[in-house]
Amino acid sequence: MLIASPTSHADPNQDDAFYTALEQQDVAVLNPPAVRSLGIQTCNELRSGTPNRITATKLMNMGFTRPESSALLNAAMAAYCPEMASAKGRSL
Image 1 (cartoon, helix red, strand yellow):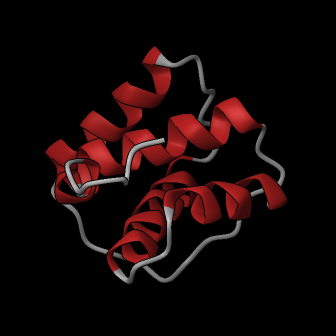
Image 2 (cartoon, one colour):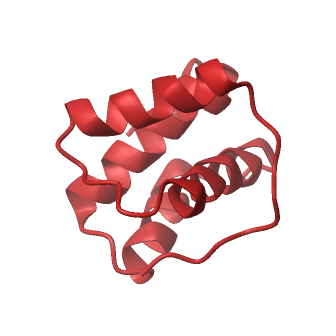
């Protein structure tokens, strides 16, 4: 189950990197716009100070498996908020 968030802007190259990262982790993307919005929303939560484990739990509560949640979180950080991936204690 995916919940779409308000439209967010990202560079098309960021989107390509996001989808490629998910594909490399064997995560099927059935609704690219909704998954993209979820990736951007994930970064917004991380930037606001939400810990990775809480963000991953929220994704699991939406119906994603633990590996899918981890893949989505890591792909979002790599594509849309790389500064969060390098922040101390942020990686899973």
